[in-house]
Structure formats: structure tokens, C-alpha cells
Length: 206
Image (cartoon, rainbow, N blue to C red; front, side, top):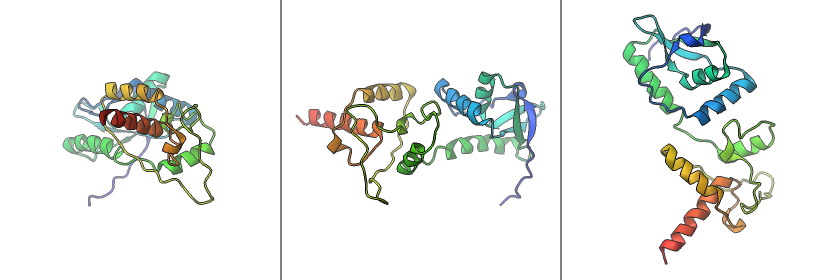
């Protein structure tokens, strides 16, 4: 194991932070809006990681989305940490590793929903729309369970192109799920997806 670096947080001008040309992480406007909402609500709590190239420019290693949100908000400075202990190759690898490890696991969905129910936040604006409590008619109701019991739910992750995601989310808005088919699940999108696929399977088997 390599020695752990001593990191110092400093302020830098946002305009001086240069995006890494080969950063493969996508940052659609919807996500930037959510990051901007978080920064507006809580402040910029995460330093941007940078690496100085041979021209002395501070290239972003991780934090591209946050820098875009800061620019959108008109914020001129940001806290940064310098990862100059890494070689050029190492910092490029770390950019991709950091991007990947942040998406390698999902939520304990039931624990998340339970905590969201007890916290006052604009969850939709912060990007948690798919975990919002069921409120629309036709999507069932929340189940009252004995103390300590939780519905048997799990999370599945799919990698979609933006066009695929938009098509599916639009379709789910029109899907209705019978209460008996929710099996205790309180997630609106999960129930809608189950209903849509069940209907398709029924049609395909005719």
C-alpha cells in the first residue's frame, strides 16, 4: 500500500479549474440542476480534486459535475484538494475509478424511503423522484406493517441511454398497478414497471 497523501484544502477560482478531456462520466442538465440545488441548500461541502499538468493548469480529477453546477450558480471560488502526488497516468486512472465506484452500489431502498419520510427536503429537486412516496391514484397505498417488519423489496440497476430512460419514464407515468401486485412495495416506479411488464408478458403469451 502506498503512503497516504497529506491533503490540504485550498480555495481556487472556478474559472481556473480545467475539465479532464477524457472524463467519461456524463453530466446531463438534470443532474447539474440537482447538484446546484444541493449546493444552494447545503453549501459546497465537497472539495474538487485537481492535478497540475506540465503547463501548471489545475485539471479536474473528480468533481466535474460540481464545477458545472458552481458555474451555473455563478459561484466564483471552490475548495479544492491537489492530487499532485499522482503521476499523469495514475490521476487519469483514478478519474475513471472514482466515477465507477460511486455508481457500483445502490440504496437499501426501504431504509432510504423510511428516512425520507421523516426529513423535510425537496427530494424531487434533489434527484430522488423515483423514491418519492406513492401518492398518485392507481399506484396503490403504503402498507401498514407490524413494528419491526419491512416489505421484502430489492433494488435492480439498469444502464440506459438517455433516450431509453426518457421513453421508459414517460411510459411508467401511464402505468397502473393493482394493490395486490405491489407486494408491500411502496416505490411508485417499481410498481409501475412491474405492471407494464406483466401486461406485456400477458399480451405476448396470447
